Image 1 (cartoon, rainbow, N blue to C red):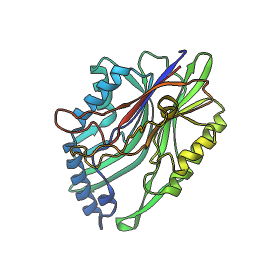
Image 2: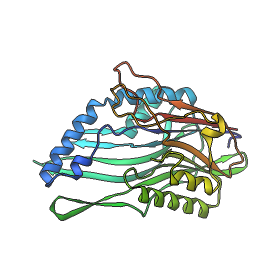
Image 3: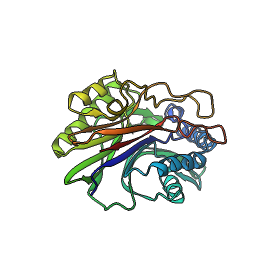
Length: 300
């Protein structure tokens, strides 16, 4: 139990896009595209990026951390598990976290020459290791994209959320990590509505962390505000920009230029005293830690 609460959210950037794989004309061609995506991901330097993200999180030591694009990449016998890489770096930085819950959203894989190439997208919620365990879980949104792929198959592109309950003072608070749909605004809005319905049914104060793929003028943000959610960034920083996304090239000159990532809360009886951007500096390689900036929010 704690009398205040600090939380963070970070889209890790999975390191490569998968649209060319979905668009491939055959399963062998899909496997080729996935191997190319794997090579692009390796070039994005996630181990270096994870160490930098872990260092920033360790400096703030939030009780809970929501992470998105927590990819699990495989190409033959080579594996990159972003969740375990980040947790290892957090422990090395003196800030061990356990995984409270993970939502496995969209797996994509193809076989060729006896090997498997693919990536599984996930969202996760981490809890600082010194805190007691509580109820936790995950859920996949019913609203989803169905995409035709080679051989007459249909790929189901899903999104979801991971959650955990904590106690703040004598009150339970449900903390959620989510990543709403990026490419279809109607599906994105429907997923926001699903999450609101779930939290309404739970009947407890809530904090929602994540990449909403929406700016404050968009309907998803307005719907959350209509249902009583307060924006921690504006609560703490007023009209300051708070830009978090999206860098076109994590090794290039571009920087973030819009608000896509949020910490929003409802019914908590807490106030965001400080909300800070993470990932504003380049790494020694010249890369950014991610294509998004992160956020850490301290509530009192």
